[in-house]
Length: 289
View (cartoon, rainbow, N blue to C red):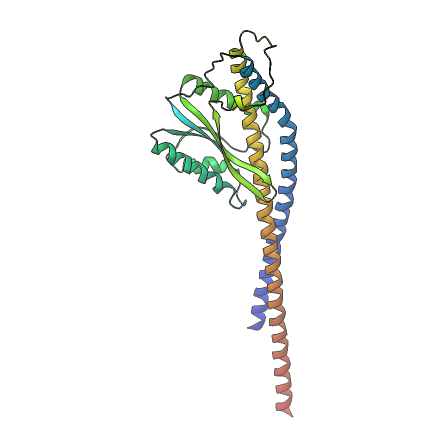
């Protein structure tokens, strides 16, 4: 009976050790992907910051400036771009985004406005498919390998919907990478474009835009939106890897602690079995004498 118990404990220790090797490997992979995602975001940031500054400059230099992308529309649905992960085992990463999306959808429905969704990430696609939500487009497994061209393709589709009046506003919900230990679900309004007048001033009407400032501004919008999508997807992917690294680190620590406890139980059971065997041998020898 004691031998069977020892075998069960030893089998359990080996099982936990195998699980710990997997979680440790996943932790290392997540750390590597996190580093590459941060480097990718840092390389892209200056270009899109310059685009934003150029848009601010056009608005500041043009006294009577009008663009459909600056005006609030009354018709059409509200487009929510929801960015989640493609895999699980990342703690509360995906659930935090979905909570933000659910809150916003309830607000829109209460106000009598229809929410529609573009789902980015397999978990987002699965989440909205299980619910009665109108999905305009689905994109899976693009977080790690997204390119500017892919982001521009998505942005141009959104801009077309906005210009046609099918959507009255565009909002983005994703996870912002704050630090290796902190990731926050972030909700931001994308279109109509706002707060350009709050950008750093100092512009002077020294530039001539052909054919017009409005035409140049409208031509920049798809690239501006593509930049926001590109950076948000990379930021979300980095946050996913950070959350997974932390979850796997905790799982590895728990496995280590469990192995320590099981080893202690195993040693106690083994010592008890040895003591029992010695006692039985001594008792048998005394009985024969």
